[in-house]
Length: 381
Image 1 (tube, one colour):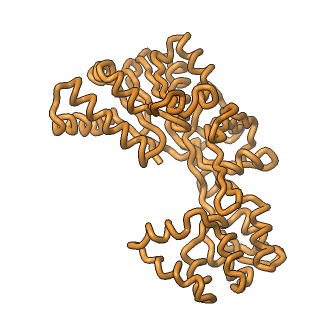
Image 2 (cartoon, helix red, strand yellow; image 1 turned 180 degrees about the vertical axis):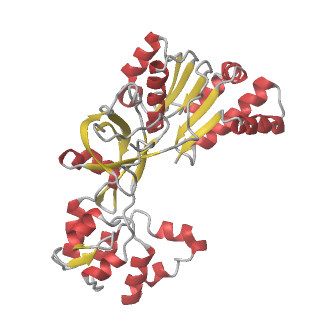
Image 3 (cartoon, rainbow, N blue to C red; image 1 turned 90 degrees about the vertical axis):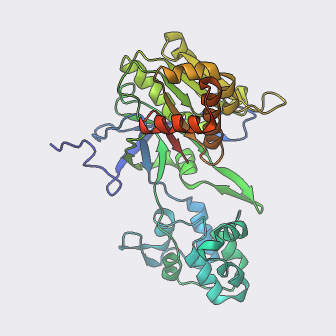
């Protein structure tokens, strides 16, 4: 028997899992649709630790693939080379093998080679013009370009040769194997929006939401050694996870309870409205009743006239957070890396300055030491 329980299944050989639960977490009035998924790992031998991610190989929306085929004036039965180098049909390749939403540089070059009207896009493909290209393509998918430049013709093989390979999505695992053996849970916001009069769908999130119940889900475990609970179960833990960033912390709380950890646990959760976005509210309240979740601090940005976010709650609790840090607390952040994590990091520095009586430079040194000691850990995207 292999020493590695995950050796049988991997990114190159994913496990064909079954979806066993798909539950809506958001209520009426929510701006986004967030769901709780449960996937069976029974008999797979797959193991994971809380903090790890699950890789999901999703397929594209068949309706979009069919629309692209019709726009190309093809049938979908044409033989092409799939992503693995083996022959397959055009329709199968568009559903399972390639990215058919975001335009690739190759398809832009191919369009520009056939029509001067697309040359303005090809002229901004240089790496230093990345922002210009993103602005020009904002809200535009491959189907839009094909319908705009109708004079352009592709053979089936030429078209798939201009596409990039469909990649797996990584999602933070929101359950502990000690609490839910043979299962893995995910907490995901379904990406749905409208641009240019068309409904757009996130590939993996809507695959799980809309189509995964009638097919297998190829999955693998992605290890995240840098996002682990402290080995010392007496140490306190501070978790900052707004939105779906709360996912790994649901797993953390389950693990802390299952392992008998005695360290205190503090969760900061933020979303828009308490009435429609309070994910896992009953679970948090039950964990508080049991004494597993010591403190739950929420920030619902739209429940009052001024917007309140998790970084504001951190500032309000500065003195107590400083006491926890001085007692050896590990500080975790998960979620949006572009804004939230930056604001939380700034709040952490200010807390250390204010409560620790430190200069900005000394606070920066304190944070650097937290990172060196693996007590400040982030899973941001």
